[in-house]
Image (cartoon, rainbow, N blue to C red):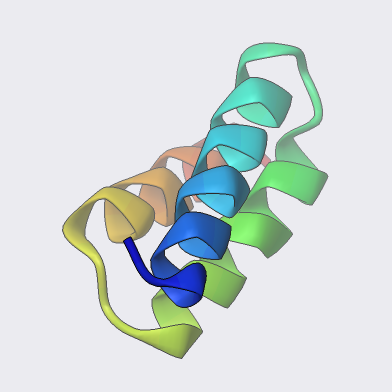
Length: 54
């Protein structure tokens, strides 16, 4: 696994954790960063979910 993929995975896990624990704005920013770097279906879904929560 290349370093960028590892970082994306960690960022996605962090965003999911923050969303699950009531930190919607922080989760939104992390998902947004993932979507901007390259469109990922899971990141896009997370972005939509956090937007709904905010």
